Image (cartoon, rainbow, N blue to C red; front, side):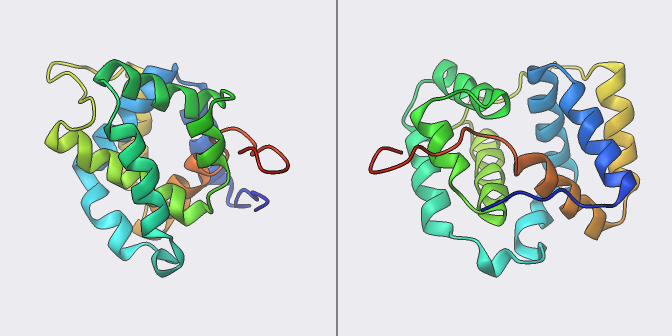
Length: 163
């Protein structure tokens, strides 16, 4: 699937601001967004019915089986587009399935089956400012922003039988 970022300048600016943050700040921002507004994202997301829940769940289960340290590395690898098996598997998913996968990671963090953000973690001032801008967006723009943020993550799948 070819990724096409929205032409909405506000969304593009927010995605670029998010991507400029340090990888751990990006992950923390995603967590704070999930806790604030994420519980309604996937069920209500436009196109949610086109997601492949079984595929997202299969990838989530691979991550869930890892140690917390390895889980954190997987998430960093996805953002950094590292050439790993999980990152390539993720890269082959459709955009809505990628969004569902991150939603499942958020649920896993909430239940601590996925490495949680430390309770005393503080966002940087840049991440906090972006978080407040995201909260102010209409719901439809939030969904577009999240999809545009998660879509380009992961590595390209390899040709042939190898993922």
